[in-house]
Length: 559
Image 1: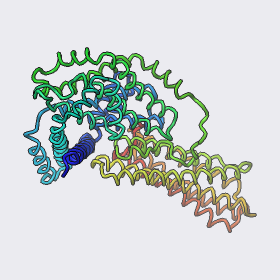
Image 2: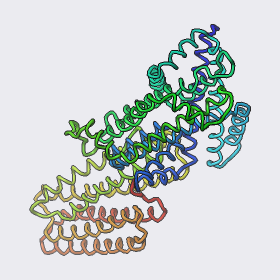
Image 3: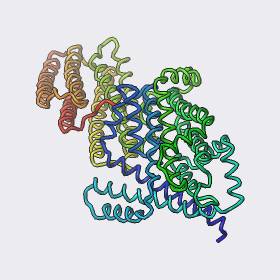
């Protein structure tokens, strides 16, 4: 094979193994972290400093600043996070992502296959899901370094190529050209961690003297700055079609890296000298990988310290860049407000959005129950039409939530705890949807009688309103229990369910009495019995909801 072709495919193959290993490690770390991801994300609600910490920890777990940024954009778009909170998360994400470069700087060439074998062995032998995830993480860690080693091996001939060394010399002497090269590399690969890994490997190649780096730290830093600029394209792409605040979050990410590159480009050589002074000493070719990692960390730490107290100013700037204006496209009432397809592969975040959407669906059903409770002679047609419309919205929304949960399951990244939580959400949604459907059934029952000559009497409508009011009270308390209110007891709801059943019996007897007094038609008995059966079923669903809450399948308010 031609040497040039061999180098190109060797580099591409090594890069593919590296990215595959990194993605696998990210997925396994998410599984291993499990519910801890929620705890990390909850830190952001306190103050900007905690937001930075949450962003750094989340990115350290996900091993991808792009994933954290996309998550923040999704939360802002869903209204679960404010713009200043998202910006603090992104500042932290830029620090967290430097962990990858620091890990790569370790020289573990002799132990690559040990990691791969031990990881495989743990995953293959162990029965525990947690140990399997740990094994797969170690295996992916080994693959990551195997990719790095492959790239380093094929790059060695480049160090002796006069044409290539001359071209690299020009890049090293013209910082702005290095920034452009780094930006283009990351735009193509869509991973700053991968391009920085390539940079670390390339810089580790010795020049003609066999001691100094082919490019040197001063030549690598501009490329590093370009890598940081290129990674912002992921955030911009993620914001397409999202809310204006989501677009502002992406712009803030761009501002952070662009401002940093503009500031540091003027001080490349002094900064390189500083990094060399605080880093490990030795032959440049042996220590430059660590120096690049330290330069990456130092860049992001410095820019975070600069921007952290200036977050309000950044908010004002992005508000100017992406000003408020009337959205041309409004969401349909039945369209999900919180679900974001970009977060399906990140279950901790995706389930937060599902929680919020299920709560929204439950509130819609609560409105339907209130409407049935308040139905009266004068406005019954308008109210019943409103309930019919709400029922269509609720059904469509329920279908969207179920499809989203199915997509999360299909990703295969759920831990056992997250799978149990997903199942709990489905159970809750099932009973909420059932109550919504029964509301619609009751409204259709009343509507049918309204359109015929035979109508429910005022006394019958009053009894119906009373029974539905009792169910509404049960439902409200059941949803409070689902959201985590420990004061709501199953026995209390069951007692109220018995009260509803007793009222049903009284309503049946009252209906028979009204027939005897010619106040109601005997032809309405079947419809009235079906209506009472629907009320009884709603009571059963309310009891189910409280039992789900007792089993700890409760919905917590999203961050």
